[in-house]
Length: 110
Image 1 (cartoon, one colour):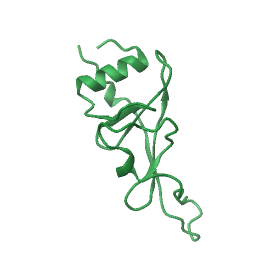
Image 2: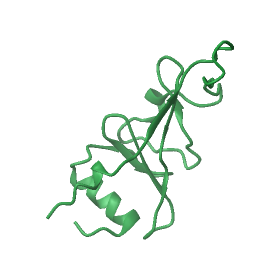
Image 3: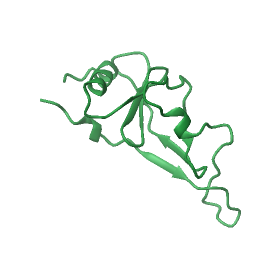
């Protein structure tokens, strides 16, 4: 039985551009990379990844979960991208690759 752990809640939080008239809006950091530069299938997710900015400069931060069965952390982004920090980025949360990475990180039996 394939567990649909991809449906586990991984929060995607966006914060808008700086707006002095709206104190609830937080500017994205200029030091964060663009999401489309970071989240490329087959590319390595930086070990120090903490978020990225979308095309409008809005901060995008996915929940980064500490692995329980391996040394490292796991995160996801956008339309099915996933990776352990410092490891290769994959795409497709129903793929065998996703199942293997998730099982390595969390010890889930697929």
